[in-house]
Image 1 (cartoon, one colour):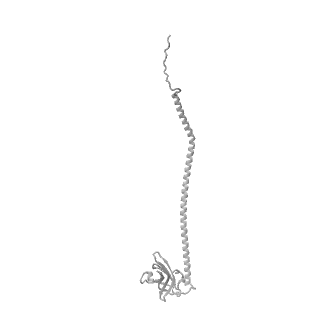
Image 2 (image 1 turned 45 degrees about the horizontal axis):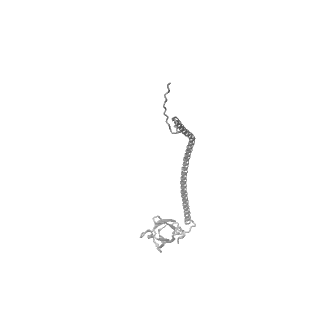
Image 3 (image 1 turned 60 degrees about the vertical axis):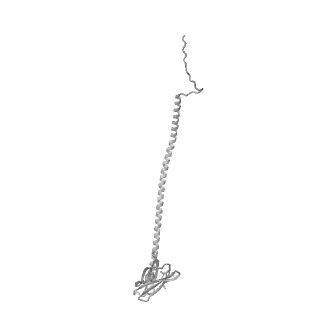
Amino acid sequence: MNRPVPRIQIVRHGSPGGRRFPLAWVIVLVVAWLLSLGAVWLIASRLAVPQLGQAQAELRTSQRQTAELQQQIQGLKQRQVNLAVSDQISRAANNEVQASLAERDEQIAALRADVAFYERLVGATGQRKGLNAHSIEFSPEAGGTWAYTAVLTQNLNRGAISEGQLRFAVEGVRNGKLTTVSWNELHQKADAPGQPYSFRYFQQLSGSVILPKDFTPQRVRISLSGAGAPVNQTFDWKSAGDPGAGE
């Protein structure tokens, strides 16, 4: 009887208790891990997307509100500028009106004074006077000169015409001494002619003179020379417009 030939089997011995997982299991584990990552991403996306959309909506709302607020701020700034300009214009107009009213008041007062003067001069109850210097007034000019305005009157002889020349000298103090500035010195001419006048009731004469430097005027001596006797009067410089200043 034939006996079976024994087969030789080679067995690889590894470390005790150490086995290698089959490749299929490894593949299964990797796929499961990837699926878990996908599931986590999907869940996170579904949870985050509503919040992201809400955040984006709130951002757009905030941007729109910010733009509206900026427009309101710009409008308020422009309104403030307009109000400031309007207030400035109103103030300037008010100042101009006040100045105009003050000027009108001065003109009315001057006209009333003139009317009273004319009434005294030509009225039936007016005091009769011959040739007379009613007033003289001085005011400084830009070029350093002094403008003067003199008013001459006469109502003693209403049919007569008074003719002649006006001259005056200014008395004052210079360098601590009393000084008189003559008509020629006031005009800076060696032989300055007098200012002519010719009137029936009154006449206003005006001109400009030059006072010396460091000179303080105090009085004005007026001389009227004509067909009759000369008239000499003195006026105080500070109250030259006062009719009662003449002597």
